Length: 443
Image 1 (spheres, rainbow, N blue to C red):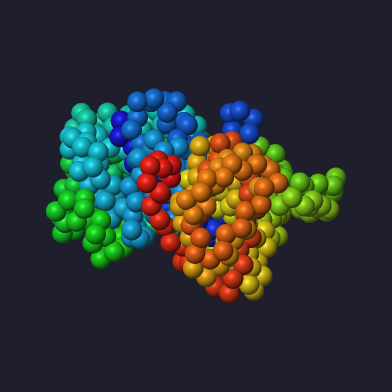
Image 2 (cartoon, helix red, strand yellow):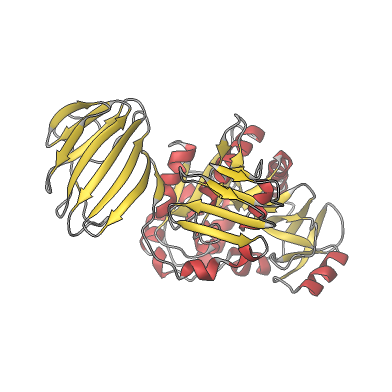
């Protein structure tokens, strides 16, 4: 089964833990199978593989998320990178072109498209197999998965089926309604639109060519920024006549706000947190290595990270996006394909960062024009390459690199380094990558 996971999101609604680099699907706050914590994308990928170990998964995402995906899922998962955000229709069409032209997937093969971040049980992914089977049997050109509502919600669009059978013809779609209209939809047997559907790969390419002028994947990628921003529902689903919906009655949650996300947490707290006996229905997440004490807190969300602190009533936590959009500042934590970095201190002419590299990984061989750097190794073992000279590194070692010096470091074991940057122009743009010295195969 071919599965396209749509991984978008701007990281606003779960601030301050999420940001433009670390969207909500990468937050490791859900209970994992080994007793640790896992993210939404890790959970969904694990569930897919448990239901169908032979499933071929492609993640459609923006370039800012690629490092986090590789960090959490490994380098075997296929990734189709959008040059910029253009909503779900262009993203899905680009992924379809990628599957045919790059991965050589036959056009008659069924493809299932779904979001990367639903909180569901294994039955959900078993239903994806049913959607693919209906497409293979030519029951319809497009098959949707409709979620049976558990309450009248104003947050979701609705699918109106022709009857109450398990598999039904779709009569029409409805936009996000007001509360009274949502109650009426439920009385009529309407389903939540969870953005899950299946079709043949050739169908996606046919719809793409009807609305987008392109020859193949390379041409599409080069001109992606010119495409109209439009959702797949508007561009395709609402116009399709050969359309079925399959009812899904299992647990399904969209963990898009702190209020709903807290419902999936294993306990009331994560990190160094103390709640006294007078606290009620309060969830606290603390990413900093400082204690947080809560007393008399009722129906609250408290989230603490290097990017900021959120203290909110649970209901009000759903409305933080416009306030977060007005905030600007340095991203203090991000996961990369090689490990992670945490900004510890920012001054006018300096920045201090903790860099953690995973075993077997290293940074690009690079230099900076406008800043000096000093590395202090605090844990693990590895090897540095400084202007072509190799140096073993261990805890306590200090390496100075003036502006213009080419440098990198590799991790034999998990390697922790405190990096101090000093200069009047400290920015991510001040980085020049260089080829490794001849005969050196590491990168």
